[in-house]
Length: 155
Image 1 (cartoon, rainbow, N blue to C red):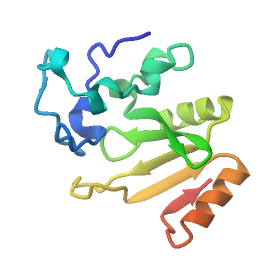
Image 2 (image 1 turned 60 degrees about the vertical axis):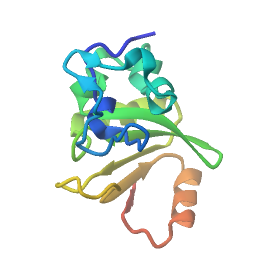
Image 3 (image 1 turned 135 degrees about the vertical axis):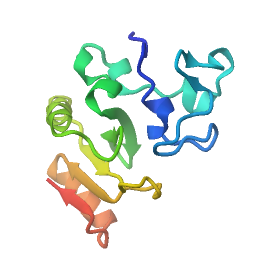
């Protein structure tokens, strides 16, 4: 299993958590230049339980897809009967090259893929635009469950 090394993307506020005060662009108060100041006593959620795909699948994602290097945190998210690969941008949006690489990864693993863009000022805790790709059944379910939400760019 890999270790985070110098990557602190989840601690930098891109993975949100009320437990440690993480929100887009607002780093955890315990994150320092040398890592986590409370590592031994860090909370269960999200600090101990969260594993990005780069950590969890070292054979499937190469070094260039480490979140701080590629601009996105990839994670598995359960939704209904699906396991979805969700991309959380490290900043406002997932870079095009990263999106291409992780779309290929999702297709190879037969995973639906969801990603989003954030407001430029990070004042909104939710996505401004959402996108999804995957099997027809998944896209149909997304359309059915979110019929009024035209922000979904189904691909």
